[in-house]
Amino acid sequence: MPTYEYRCRTCAYEFEEFQSIADPALTKCPKCGGLIERLISGGGGLLFKGSGFYITDYRSEGYKKAARADNAPTSSTTPPKSGDSKSKK
Image (tube, rainbow, N blue to C red; front, side, top):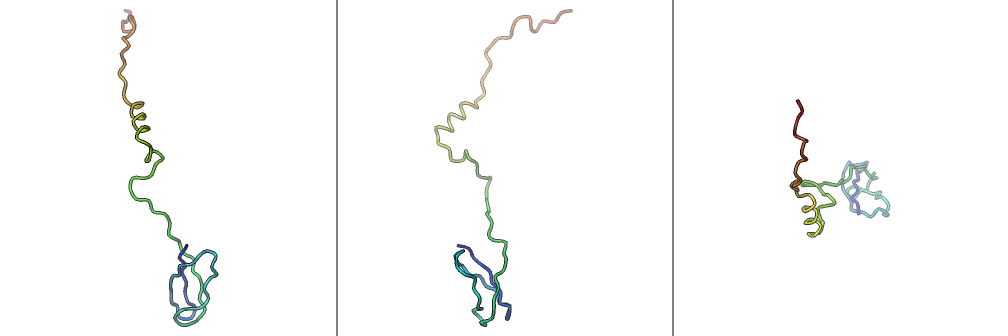
């Protein structure tokens, strides 16, 4: 449920009210009884802390081991072809 901000038009009292989206807007100031208006606010956007969230962050251990094996450097054991390194003069 969102928190709405209100301001009284009579006494300028500002307050917040925790309401359901379906609830009607408040109309009476709790301090002086005057007419109040709902303010437009920026909301409480999302805040991500840390290095980030990726699809691979929560993979199984088996998947991680297989991925490491696939990315492991392989050594080339094929000998060079004869005649490739010779230059003609």
